[in-house]
Image 1 (spheres, rainbow, N blue to C red):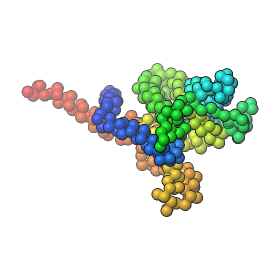
Image 2: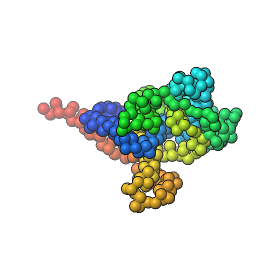
Image 3: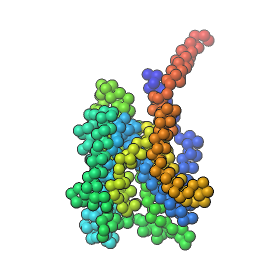
Image 4: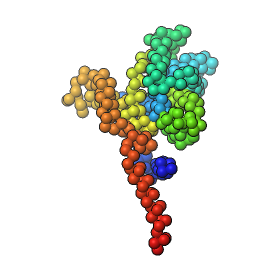
Length: 400
């Protein structure tokens, strides 16, 4: 009973908008708007691309956080859903273009917006198709199966399965194009000035930020729902959760399909932004990096996943970009700067080992998860304090 009381108190306190939180959110909003616009205004498109790329990884980390952080299912093949969304979006885009009259037709630009929910649905269905036979497994066995699934998808894409994926050459093929999304030309014409250009990268940055905000909203609602509590119960003790009436298989499938859905959304957005996809963009190391983002930031934590994505996806690219500037050119040669990206797996591996030893809950863990991984003494002390206050208040009238 005492634990439930503390949980309710913590949930209410964390949901309350304090002046400090409002100031923090306002500062983040100003930064999200001002920073890319500033870099675009000075012609530094590279930094705008980094912002958009980090946003894509934030979506991926938040999606995987549903599976790993909330439901406690170790998925090492998450990048397969990312690739599924990208390839299905591009291939269905060709069909859409033929239906509306070709890539130059006025409605061709709607392909991204029209196919966004379809790609998300296809990725979610793939998650259900994979999860139905394998989610009876746990721990390492589930990790190995999902790892194998991710590699099967990548190899299938590389071998030009059914003649659709064009093998390692990727999509689009020669003579084909991924059309510009509706709204991009309008933004370029109406929001550009003589000294400022509303570029393609800035347009996709805005789209990615909007999708990230939608992702955060949905996941916060899920976290406070009956399904979210079932995920946490299942993560803590699957047998106990089943004994209390949680349908384990259905709960796992919800987590798997929702996580896959956000992977698909990130995939089609990446494909239409970059304008080219190949199997190399969806290899096993991408899955490892996304898992690292969730673990480093804090499993089950939305701010943690965002921070993890910023550190792992954004920091090496920023260092690489700065190395080309005068700020670090004195200390790093271009060759050394390019090697930073190659050594990032070694750096992240060491960083995770240190994190597991020093701060296993991650950089910004969820309150619930942090309490599980730390000493229970503060909780016991709080319970004892509450008990003392109750007894003292009951005794007080008698003394008076």
